[in-house]
Length: 141
Image (cartoon, rainbow, N blue to C red; front, side, top):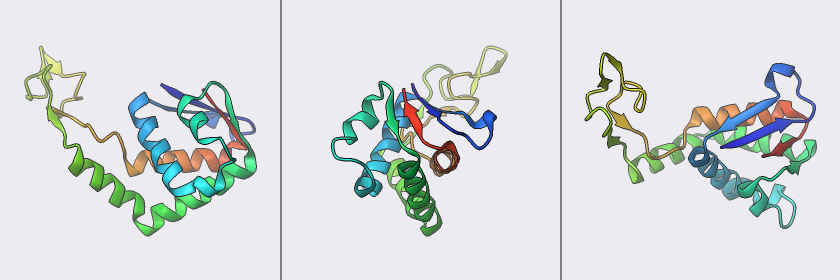
């Protein structure tokens, strides 16, 4: 799991941003692909590994602005569609694709009967951009 902790959040309730490992890797892939020129030399590996890597306020604001621009242009939605095609959902083996396990919704697929494999969504990218813009810089753990 990746956890980002804001240095100076605009609102204390927005101090953290979380992603599961697979979603974080896809998000970092996107940031690296589209914002490499905004990162310091040698910083790319640290985005993947974390370990308390610090991203300063100037960089986080620049990344947030670039990512928001890419959202507005439709680039993020296109990436989501490309990855969904490349990694289509699979049938949930825990509920045999029914969406139900026992007397309730399957907790693995959340009642959908299938499990996403793309691990990239515009909603997640939008949430990251908002966090980055309001963070005042952050640590990646």
